[in-house]
Amino acid sequence: MGGGFGFQDIFETFFGGGQQQRGPIPRARRGQDSLLRVDIDLSEAAFGVTKSVDVDTAVVCSTCSGSCCAPGTSPVTCAVCNGSGTVQRVARSFLGQVMTTSPCAACQGFGTTIPNPCADCSGEGRVRSRRTVKIEIPAGVETGVRIKMSGQGEVGPAGGPAGDLYFEIKERRHAVFTRQGDDIACTIEVPMTAAALGTVLELETLDGMREVDLHAGTQPGQIITLKELGVGHLHGSGRGSLNITIEVVVPSNLDEEQSELLRQLAALRNEERPAGRVTTHSGGVFSRLKDKFSGR
Ligand SMILES: [Zn+2]
Ligand SMILES: [Zn+2]
Image (cartoon, rainbow, N blue to C red; front, side, top):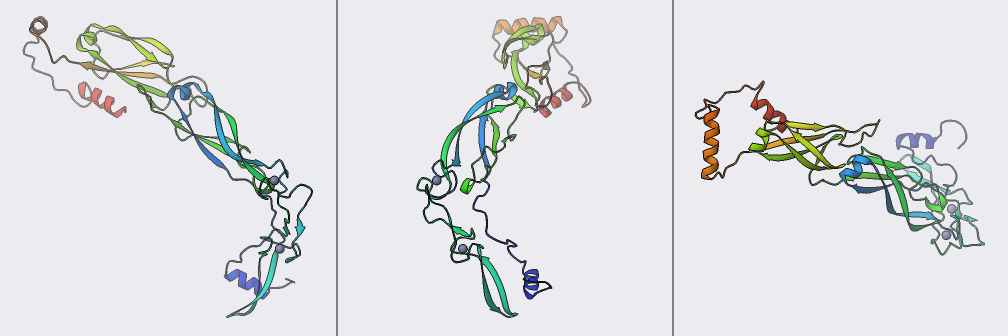
């Protein structure tokens, strides 16, 4: 190129230049990153889990150790570009004569050719392989979280360094519990009589059977919170809560005897002809309903 501000410099300034590559391109390149999905259950997200995942990837060819050459042979300097990897041409344009530099087609810019490619990898320096990878999935992960394993992706061409391997978490829906951050939630229906009198419910939680105390006079939409039965915090110790929403079921199929008993109860409570009570949005029934629905 020589010193000064040559014609090619102007040309490259106007047209974006192109490759500033000087000399041959290295044959070895970094392998690509890979992304794999891992499905987990809610309880695996809650407690963390170690999973073995089969990964299809590329590994260094053991026959040529990534050199791409058949054993006992080696690359030879490209005769077309004399190993520079580039060829220069003089082109005519509306600006006059312009020198252009482009990658050598004979060697694809590598500066060398491989007359005897390794048969086992077709001269790629790497071969497809399947291996099993163990991933430690911490408690508290959720759908979309990615776990990175540096240098565990596929190796690059000609024995280039390996890319990174990413696992993206996808959490399966649980039949009973929905997840709200590190809390989990479910709904339990109880008969009106149980809500009024109080009872003890049995619930299969992520930690096994637990008793849930229902106080006498439990209201529809009331939420019972059991601490430390939710999902483990991803950062720090401890776990979220299990929030149980109580649904009170009013019987709609009373027989004559049951109706009579309820009429007696109503009479005892002076509720035979209740006036009803208008509640405001700041308290009472409406706000409880609102809490219940906005909590979803
Ligand atoms: Zn090979
Ligand atoms: Zn060449």
